[in-house]
Image 1 (cartoon, rainbow, N blue to C red):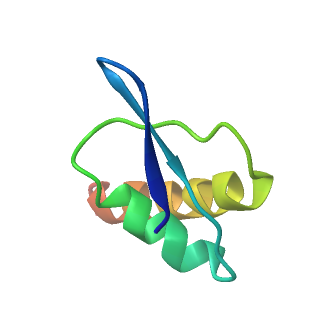
Image 2 (tube, rainbow, N blue to C red):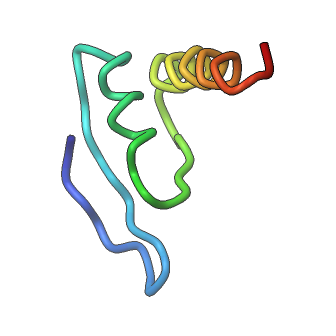
Image 3 (cartoon, rainbow, N blue to C red):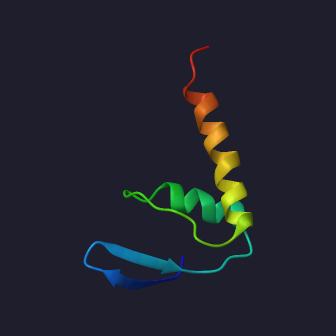
Length: 61
């Protein structure tokens, strides 16, 4: 996925790149901790699409 950089005692930065933003977003979603996207509108958009799909799947029929 990329390389990890220590920011401080509580924060780690993941620096990476990808040609497949959908797969990258799916991998990020599987991380056990909270995260935010500081750069890359493409990854951010892919996460929004994934979030909508997961929200719809979890909604009552």
